[in-house]
Length: 110
Image (cartoon, rainbow, N blue to C red; front, side, top):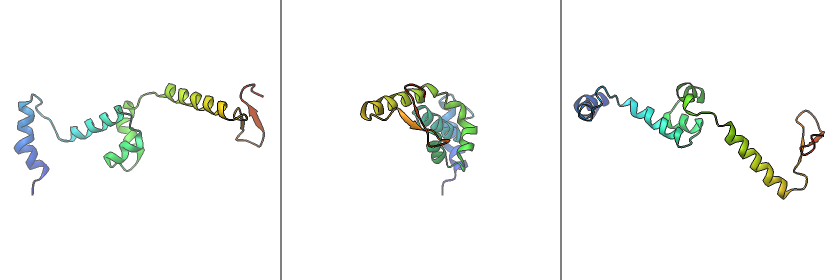
C-alpha cells in the first residue's frame, strides 16, 4: 500500500525541489483546486462539496476573500430579469408587498 507520506518523501519532495519549489506540500494542491474553482465561478456550496467541508461557513472562513464583491453582477441580473418580465407580462410592474396584501407599482412607487 502506498501511503501519502511515503510518496511525499520518496517522490514528491525530490520532484518539487527539482522544479524549484522546495518545501512543497501536497495539501497546497487542495488550496489551488479550491482557488481555481472559485475563479471559474463556482459558488460556495460547490466548493464546500468539492472539499468535503462540513459547512459552507467553514469554506467561507477559509476562502471567502476569493469570492469578491459581485453586487453589480446581481443588480444587473435583477434588472435584466425585470426588463424581460415587463416585456412579457402586463402586470409585471406590480409586486405584492411582503408585509401584506397590498401591491406597489414599481414604475410609480405607489
